[in-house]
Length: 309
Ligand code: ATP
Ligand code: RIB
Image 1 (cartoon, rainbow, N blue to C red):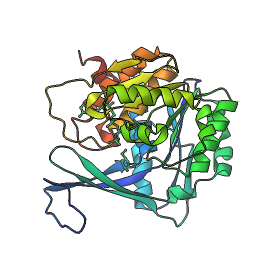
Image 2: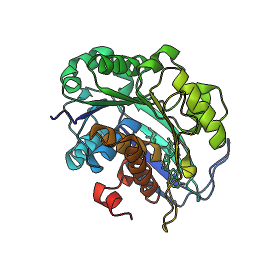
Image 3: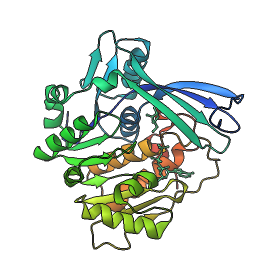
Image 4: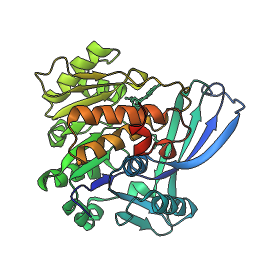
């Protein structure tokens, strides 16, 4: 393992995605057009995106010893994601997510983490070698919150760069944000953390400042089809704004767009790219992924991104 390695602390689940003209309202049944079974879970999707974008990655995750767990193991073998960080829980079920996707690519998701809920701080300690041999940590809120904050603490104490994707949003002790070098919320998560309703670029700038005031080094708010806004500290009022990349292919599935963004972002940081270059790389990578179906498997490879234009 080289010091370019990225440690991801997250979850793996199997996504059951249902494609339908319109999302069902509560109490409604709709007839769908197709369904797809594929790998999901934010941490796992990020790990695959890191590997495809040219990064080296070890995923720390807890899965069951069932058929879904086997799906994960096969995925990591083919995607060159190191499995030394996996914890296999005997007799437990690997998680799953029920995803509905409408004709505009809009989605709604229920994720059941299953065995991933049993990941503990002690298990993180048992994987200390991964932290010792990595330069960057990427984590989020699908793992138990005490495990996410413990991983940030451990990474900070060992001099790793820390990236927190606060998704899905949960409230944590505000002091924990001081452990974060790069915070990567989407608009909703940025609104919940900052208390500013992010609806456009101006409000994203205000929220970015608030996030930096919490002690975050750099705020990177992803804005879906509008792109991304990065605020490099409390005095960086304008920040760096990049619109999403326009391509001739239609947007068909935005599930995992944030994960692909985070994966490519982590790769850029681990390679020592400038922040501006890293943002451009992650924005391009995620913009390609929304033209493809699936979560993990929608991540493009590095040369596809380099050949974009
Ligand atoms: P998800 O929860 O679906 O994984 P997210 O809400 O965390 O996604 P978004 O802010 O929607 O993340 O998107 C992340 C990035 O993906 C954007 O910053 C942009 O680069 C790209 N992206 C998302 N939606 C589109 C779109 N419609 N067109 C082009 N690029 C997009
Ligand atoms: O970000 C998308 C992911 O969120 C899906 O793959 C689903 O499994 C949920 O974890």
